[in-house]
Image: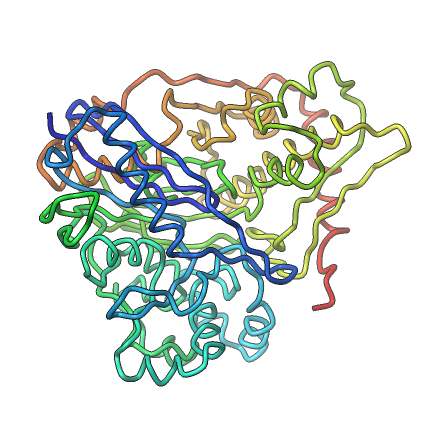
Length: 495
């Protein structure tokens, strides 16, 4: 039996899946890795730890699936997008820890660029706002902070990219990326589909370090020199995690939308061949159509989604396991006014407030941990509400159905609250690991294992639907309290 190997490299952990020829999961393996916080607001990963973890996970996933290494037909990669690595081209060793998309260390530099009047140029060429979220200022920071890095880059000794390109280099020795990841760097002209010389000069990133850019479904390279896989297996898909989820949900046509609830929340609205700049704080980004070719989407990004539950578990110790968050809130009265704004890394769309900080409002002496947990869950849905409203204003279309995926969607309370606060149906697929599904579908499509119509058949499994049932006055009250809290938490930091 031939299989597709899908590497899903996320923000807090990596997972490797084996997909059979029928599109079903044969087996998988998961491993978390270390989160490094060298200073408040700074977040780093050890890229070598990530790669070593992926190697071990490949072995585990194949063993669980009862698949031989020689039976791997193709590999697909999906990844946390803006996280940035720079490494030595000769030995693959990173010259610094990867700077994670959540990291705010370059916020002051981004403010300087905005104050200098560059925001319009950046948005018109990239579809993005100037923010420390994206890769450009991260690359420049590493080059400026590691002694001799700029000189080495000028000599062609260094390679830079997002995690997909580092994993590809580790698998094949090739230095390539694809359109969706490139579109998140703030260096890629998404109208012309190329690295932009004006932006490279603005952000002081030399073209010599950047990868070749291909469509998301393409032959990126073949495995070589690995202990865990034979030489010659093609990597046929690479795609940023949110665009992978969009494809995995089979939202490949204009007007279709999905929201992924992972460490952050990411709402994408497919716009087909239509390049549309948002007037409401959203991003324009590249996506994938039904043939695996480039398309456009509007995107709203929430920095802290499911990560708020991790914070409640690991730092507040209100939970022993994330899954307890639903159980602990059972039976709570509905009438409290506790609101959490989890702006631990600033606020993303539609606010783009890098100086906002997390806050909890409405506390009293009898406030319980369970009430704060519920406020944390609500904050995930309320941030997503802001994205939906901005998207509806931009497109002039009301979203009637929102497809959802990601680990946090296992929480039934969260999904029902999301449907109630939006006033629309929320659909959750049986398999919520749609980032891995998307990269597997793309690799299988490129390998000729499936075509577009077969993918529609494979992906038309049963959906669980959550329908709204709250009165308008309840919805208005919840939203009013939320926006009041967001306003008070905004622009808090003096840094």
